Length: 123
Image (cartoon, rainbow, N blue to C red; front, side, top):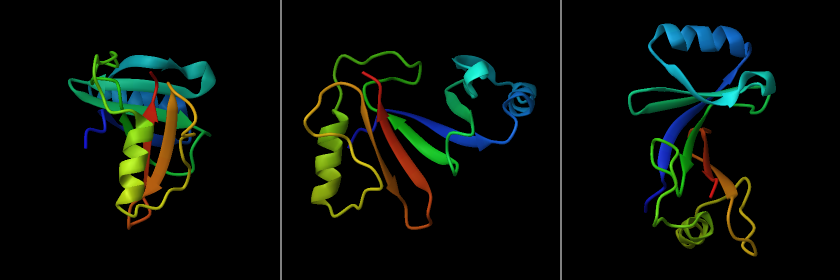
């Protein structure tokens, strides 16, 4: 199962302070909008997202259809197909992608320790 590009989405209290901290660790801004309380940073192939006031918990994030540079892939498994495969394996969902749509969509599952996993397709 190919889930796409991976990043860690962090829930932060003060996005400016968090951005400054991670920039000291060598991360650079890659995307997002600090005025909208979200930033994407990277250090080599490592990608993290900083989100203030958007999520309750830190979560693992996968982006079908993207490589680690957030560039669209020519071929990938659509998020709805991934969802169907996981349902067939008995996975429980917190939220689901609308099976009647195409293009961008997402779903959320939770691992046995309560960690949310977001599969978020942007293409």
